[in-house]
Length: 399
Image (cartoon, rainbow, N blue to C red):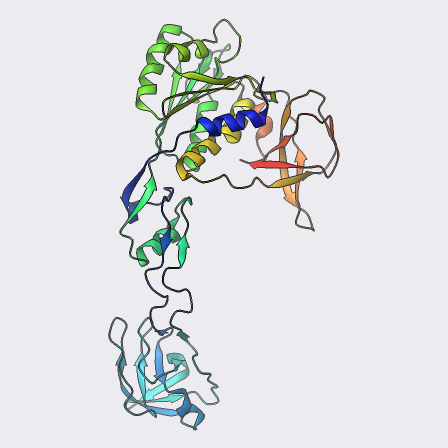
């Protein structure tokens, strides 16, 4: 068996870089950005009126003026007007450019207007540049607005459009087949016999992929028939960038998956990792395609998916180093005597010192997936330690 660190390094070494494509900016939400987005010009690109009202020359207010003859209207989207008499004003519309010789905007609700004259509310105090979004105060031209490698959200789309990007270079969304193997499995809504169990691994993994933005994913169920496995896996391998199999990777008579994958030309990188749960984990590659064989036990499947598969997808799509994994501290002692890495389901909270605290949520083996309900993620406890005392700090993977 190899270590968790070795498994992680091998997956990273053999992971492909997914190609990028140009896509209309409005269609890029949830895609991974493959270029930097930089400001087209300063923002705001001019002194911008921030409220509806009037624009005046502030010195006239300091000189005692409280009523101002309206010379005209400065509307948004029009060239700046020029105040002919510094004791007058312009009506000013939100978003418009500030008229020349004006440096103060008074909101309309603090005014009264009669016969073309705007008068200030009694006792109103003003300041120079109030209600004006000053030219270049947000950022300069060329400023980095969004960095390559982020998953684009609605605000990022707005930023890109405002910076003049009609199209964006984004990662191709990989196509992924999630395959459950086993005669004992039936779907969540199918009739259930006493000796059967419901198929949950592929449902959970499909949900996890969709939540992470990998939406070109489909779920399949194959029986424990070697010939049928070979035929269908050959087809799915041809059609997809990644296969995720659950079950059939251990040492039983009906665990055909490793042998079938070898027949199909998938090169095994490793099989078995010194970890609990999930020791039988299998990983292989064929060209630019990756194949994961997860154990069939539900706790093993969902933890190994979170620990290995999502990071690979994110790295292959973003082409950037993975972000640092946060640490959490145990709220009580935990013992584990086997010399393997322990993935420990936990619930979490932040204490008064803003530390992320993790309370173990014990499972009755890797088949006890019900115990995962209500957990927040899992800790990765190192292999060479038997006792993990209260306040022990370990990497935390959130669901």
